Image (cartoon, rainbow, N blue to C red; front, top):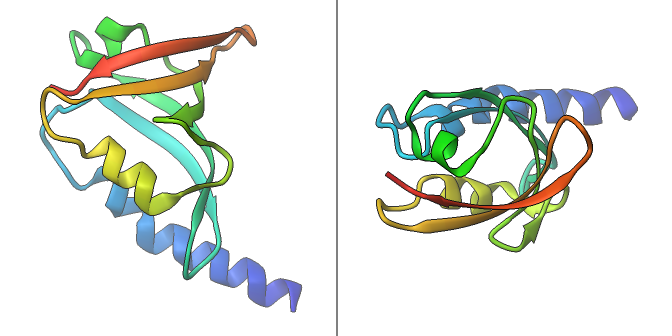
Length: 116
């Protein structure tokens, strides 16, 4: 049974990777490493900054590689539904996103990113 659960999680991750990476426009200017669990109603377990594009809204807000998102628009990670996270990360230009992050030094910070 444990093997089956791991297989379901692996399949979800493989098929959902493109859902976060589909838009080529620089809206926020970040690529993410993330893990999720669940199949029918997946939840994000971890969301970590993998890359920050120079002069992007994310860089201007102070986001750095390795920052771990603890909350996105008040939705706590782990536990935030993947559909909500995806929706926030694909927000329209001009939208302000509030993130609570933990940086590489363990310091928790509040950041506001204006989607480009």
